[in-house]
Length: 471
Image (tube, rainbow, N blue to C red; front, side, top):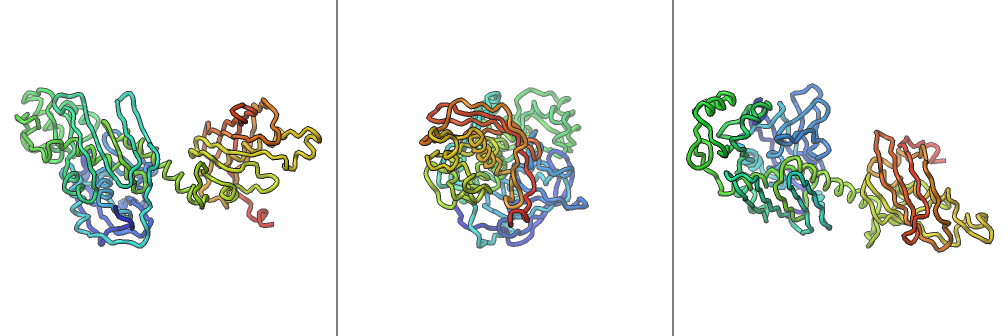
């Protein structure tokens, strides 16, 4: 896999009709600087809004992946993104003067050909790979969908599809070398649907730009000439459509025996580009679709964001430690004698964090609480949980120098057992609700698996007064 970032060598454009909206637009690919990423620009709108190609901006996945910011949307971006990811392009500007990219022939090949014509420019910055070092899994029981990422020092994708439909049956495919296989083996695979779905798609206001030249229609039911003519008129196809004899409408030839499975793999590559970084992993997917792909991409993107934040504050990697005391000091404003968490051993951003506080006989509060019978003040156990909770909100603090976490309420505090010198506190905090800049959390503290304290917290993010901090 490539080690340095790359963009394209020159601007290239293409014009055409969108698959679902039927609108005509022109799309221009342009070179972009290092660390720019992939961004769409709606150049037909007055303020020319930019929409980053990441999972945070997905607004619809009904029959394709739609990105949006406010009123600005771009439909069916997966083939464009698959082309960019498949060609290992890191930084690119995509200007578009409409709401949906041209469908071309229903595959990624028209975009790939345009990008190959533009050529590539190697940049100086290294690629920001997300290296999967433990299994990440997504499961949807209702639709029997499974997507798994396994550790691997390269990028491989395997897909199995089974619609329990005899017209298609079970198919599988695998990509093992992006550079050698993508352009020839997967980019040409076209989108597909079943004949039984066409009427429903029409009624939903979709496939307005659909045609049997830009989609494979698999025959899974009988339709007489009148029904086929009705479909032809509703879609706006100019010539007669027939059931054909090879199981595909109008006897269209497949480019690959397992072209539907290959197209599902293509869609998956495009949707996984929404992670926002190239991935080193083995991806296994059973019955993937856009909704599942995007949910999985969101899950992996959170892991990517967490790894970036950990790298930002934890300079030395330590086994079993997310943040050591030096990293914590880079995050929290607290200092001796009021810094009450020694390390973070587990972190799921905006979900759960586990911190550790080792209680020694040298703690300053033991001198007066109580002489001859040292017990850690309960309020300081609560404070230790609160500080740990502040780290849980790290993703909500893009600029630590400008923000502080203030606790607004502490409710349902219960002390179960005294904490004494020699005890080690395990501080487990879970996020229970997030509303704008206000968060609620539930905390529990354990010593040797025994619950010693629990509480509920409400916290808000406020602007830091740097004048006060500098005094």
